[in-house]
Amino acid sequence: MKHLFVLLLFCPLFALSQESLEQELDSIKTTEDAKIFAKTYKKVHKSKVLTFNKEKHKTKLADELFKLSKGGKKVVKKDDKKTYYKVIDKDKTLHHRVSYIYFDGRKMTMADINAKRSKIINQFKQGYKFEALAEIHSMDLNAKRGGDLGWFPEGQMHPDFENAVKSHSKDDIFTLDIPDRQWYYIVLKTYEAKDIEEITVLKYTEVTK
Image (cartoon, rainbow, N blue to C red):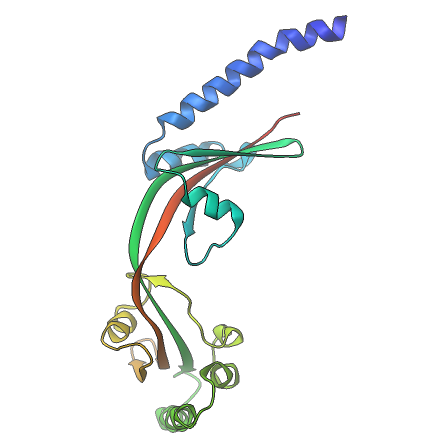
């Protein structure tokens, strides 16, 4: 009987807490609001602001979040935890995609870089797979992915890199030099630019036990 009384005593408090949380989540309208909320509850509730990209994120959760309208919420219950996801913003951003082979000008002479680039481009034109050439020759960790950079939005890469990508068409292979950084590339444009949907999501987790 005593335990039942304690349970009944705390039920209204729990309900009030849930109602307060729902109200606070509903009051969040902008990404800046979401970041402030996430910072406040980061440690205790592992709150954070996430960005989902429709091309990169192919999980069931991502698919369900993309179906929500701006301001929509989803609750996921697992074991003793309840996680809230709220869509703060939805937008489409122009993205590009290329593969590349990188050469470090601090470790190679220009003569060696140019000779190697010429040889690699000839091999590609003879039928060698770019992925295999990147794995062998690229001086970048991305070599493990065959040089694939994945979809990237405008403004993310060095301006010279982006401008060169924009000036070429799909399947073009070209060299690119950024001398002030001593970065030298062979770039293969693998896709034409396209708009990709992205959503900004606030995540908040609480223990229900």
